[in-house]
Length: 181
Image (cartoon, rainbow, N blue to C red):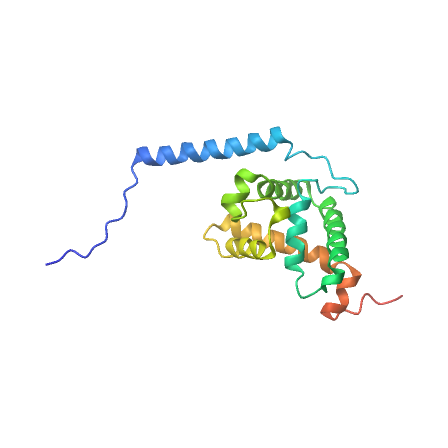
């Protein structure tokens, strides 16, 4: 009789401790690097209330991919800047705890040490193609890790709420605007 059972890899207590220590060291190093490099500095970029200079390259790569089909190519630069302003205004009205979580998400996406492994974008966001950003979004949307799926949902909601709060977006979705009083 043939044995057809598959043997699962065994995770010993020692291996589990090694993985835990390695993970803790990686996260501690990433946090320390972010703090020392100024990545997590809370100083807003010029002209913004909340958004920092380290957040802008990522958002400028993300927004055109999310607005693809809703905005013509010639109007995209104005749509990106307008969406950034609306997003910044929305972030300024978040609760302190929600703002802290959003800033942490932006830090993870800006720091090269965490950006590459988590997003698949190994270079800077400035040099990322639209396909790179789409692949990142798909990767997070379909991830087996609920934390990444929640990050995807958060990014999607933040950008879409910022875009559709703008008057220029209303015609695309058939909204005539608020009634005049």
